[in-house]
Length: 105
Image (cartoon, rainbow, N blue to C red; front, side, top):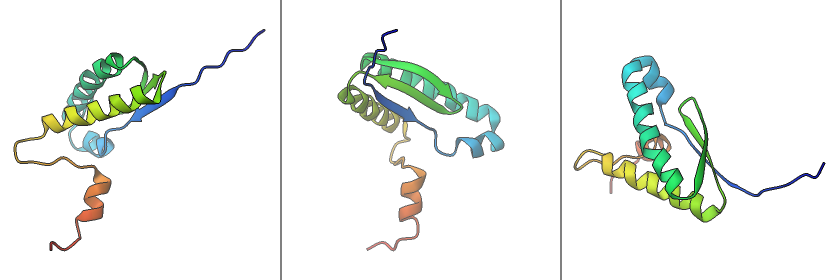
């Protein structure tokens, strides 16, 4: 039997703090999961990607090119930025942890 190989760029996204949110407010967590799906699925498809599956709060997608994967990730970030409240900045938990105890200059 002949084997075939295919190179792929993989994108995996995850909702930071989802497990804690699930414990605090299950309804809000499921709503966030639904919004995440509605945001990412079209972007993945528009950039020639294939939605492989959801893994809890994570999304696994495959692309034929690295450029398509990166373009999708940038578009997801831009879309999330548009959802932030006016005069607010959304950052990841790791960024928050890095800057939260720094003095302002």
